Amino acid sequence: MVLCDDERSAFLLVVDKRLVDFDSQGGNQFSVYLVTHFELSDQSYNDVLSFNDDLLGMKHNCSYAMDTLSVKEEFDFDFPFNMLAIKSYVQELIKMLGIDITLPEMKERDFDKLSQD
Image (cartoon, rainbow, N blue to C red; front, top):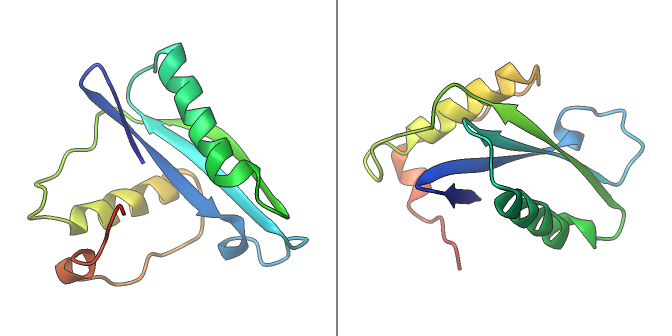
């Protein structure tokens, strides 16, 4: 999800805890990180909370928590010509968070079939 607030963008990173903690007690546990280089307005922050709740809050056997991950600058890449920059950026973020996951190898064409429908 990308949220624009006064021409600036923030992103959500959703981590499935089952991929990190194989000893979890079952159920779907997610960590949601609001990745931003600025402070969101109250309205925008509430929109993010509402989106998270709509996406994850009413699911059976599902829990989540959101935290803010502050970064120094906005993520910028040459869309649509350098889609692998997304993978590199996400890998940096999960490293910053101390999460022991390595994203799989990808090619530019792996992004061709993504849809927002």
